[in-house]
Length: 237
Image (cartoon, rainbow, N blue to C red; front, side, top):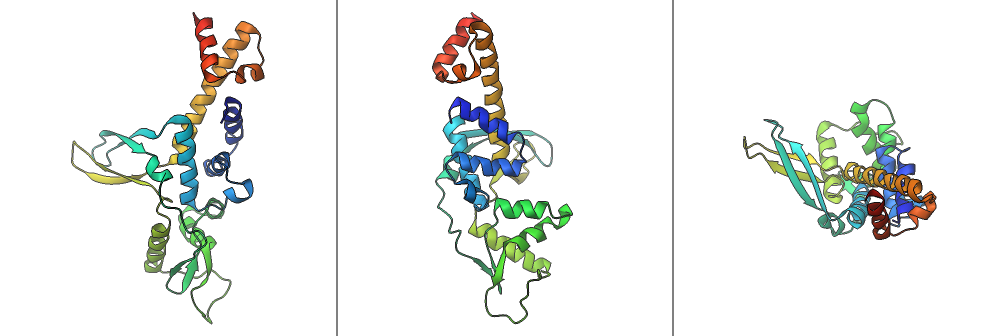
């Protein structure tokens, strides 16, 4: 992205939900707008990782707290492993027992989250992904089946195996108490934090240079980052 595109991304994304920002990010790395919402979640995460690497570096740094003792734990995560992961076969249905499922997408997740009580979102997501019975089944109807807990667990396990990037887990072991645990890496949150910081810095530079030289926003943004920084240093003395 150019500096102008970064500000446009920030401006548009500021009005969107975190889920829709992920769809927008996919478009920023070349996914057609008509297809971005229907990418499997793993491919959406790959797009987020690509965008982060291209503009903010390949090593994602963060911290969490131990779930047992509260100790602060830092981590580095190499986004290249997400970018280089084998591509998904999104066109292939996931078969579990007598059911067929499509891989979860941003569109399916949004519909599930907006459908009512949050506690039932998992059921609604599976219903959104339900394609058809795996075989000829006279009991099949348009009604969503009432899956048992065992069936739900089996379905979720198969979908996770089919799209390993849909939920990226980082393992931790606390050096203080020895507790081992995993946490989900929210790539969208990390990316958006960097975008907000970049936009804030751009606005500071624009304000400073416009005040010093009378340049317009467009004129400042047309400068390369190196030349803009050189002018900023001279204004600041």
